[in-house]
Image 1: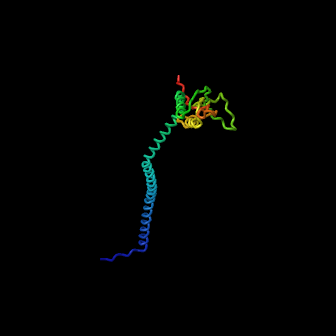
Image 2 (image 1 turned 135 degrees about the horizontal axis):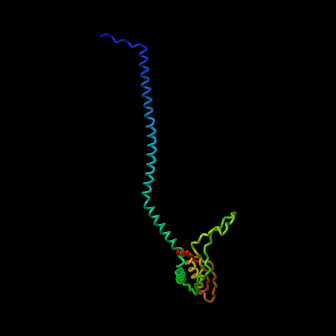
Length: 211
């Protein structure tokens, strides 16, 4: 068999150049195809971390559901107490009866209990200092949600009994306060000092029915 002819120098250089070109093309192909993939993988990793954090928060919220429900029920009970703290105006007879009941429990004898007619609605907030007052014709005053009604009470009892009576009024479920008090001591009968109290009761203003 005839021997193989040796490659010329030019052919060898061409072959090397072709090999280098193929290698460069292959490297470029890898770069262009790998970099977007790496960016996508990086973004997915961030999304996975975020989803894990969200799952942890959701899991913690689910585990705390019983406690949240208990807190909600407690808040509902508190709201119910606040709703009953200021009764409507129509409940005024019950307020007088409640005051009389406090007196009976405290061993205080009431000789007079009378709501006064000077009902005082709550005053709207005043304008801040430095600002010009707005003309009354242009502004509609906000309606007060409650009215303050003074109740005159005249009673007799010992100091301890009167003190217990006052404490019962100030800690009642219905919001009441002592506006004024006058006690006249009876040195001849320490169990029957004369007391005159001005009790401030608060009632909700009932809305007028729409025509």
